Image 1: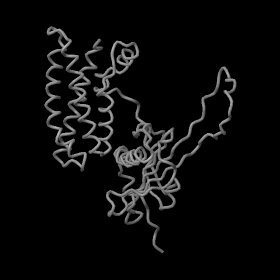
Image 2: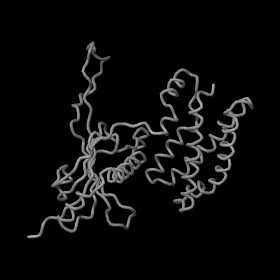
Image 3: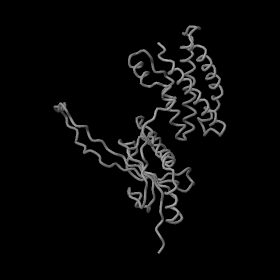
Image 4: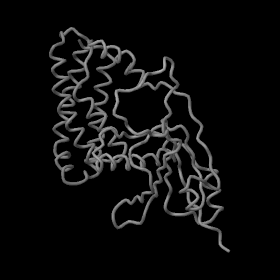
Length: 295
């Protein structure tokens, strides 16, 4: 009797409902393609929901325990099985779990983006492997892994948080205090920059192109206005003036790419232009943040 086919999977557990409802979803790269992945979503440990009552509330305990939260178990299953159990064992023994988690989370974020569009749910956000309570990779029979079980698996060990050079330059704690204390202000370009980065990292190039163009246009106006108010002797003036000039040039370069993105996917050159423009815009915003409040 032949061994049952073994399928590889990556499984995450997130401490919130990520957006799409529980179920099994087939993921294809294009309509005529064979399935690439099966995505299985299931809520585990969800708190019991009570019916809403028509009253003004009830007394709150002075020292309440933390409210229970749902855990979403997300399993990304590769649709093509291993050739035999030996291949599955060898794969798991050699697998780079962090690389696998990065590949799998791209599939998850594609589903979240589809949910945002289908349900008009603007608050459903992309996820990162570092946000998962648990990350596993392994293999098992089809129904086995779809039900959250497996024949063999490894669990990714969590790394202690490390401050990167980028986060050190941003000094987020200092800027947060400045923003809340009204000594700095959030720029209109910052939200589309973050959206463009999420779209680019998630492979949604059309959205990345459109958002980057909007962000560039706003940044040239906003940063240019800030630079014009600086004294020529201010050490920030020269650097930011050069950055604004570069962003203005990139805005013109990216215009035909974003125009094309309204109708179709940007080509390879267009994608490279989007990536460069977004990286330079992010660099300008990091430089602004590193130089301290601008008010």
